[in-house]
Image 1 (cartoon, rainbow, N blue to C red):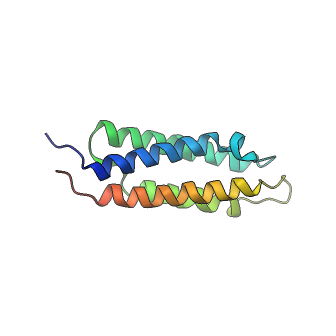
Image 2: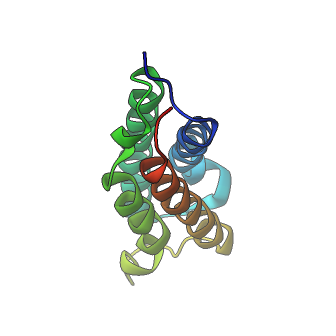
Length: 118
């Protein structure tokens, strides 16, 4: 029976936590009237949580694959890419929180999918 390395479990755990933060971020970081950003954070966060749980349950960190780093990059860049003059701009905490959560997801996704199983 194959089990994941400790690094693979850590990577999946970090992705899970970052996904949970992204789901909660609209209320925690004060997104104001940036509804599109709140929606994309919720969708990306739920997807990350699902992928992290799949990686933990199947004991294969490669389940995280290439999708997780792409979702992390989107989470990090989305506050800047989704800015609209018609909406209230998100707070600085929203920009910083997304950037940090996205960076954590990218790094954890790359490390989680590149570690060999033992």
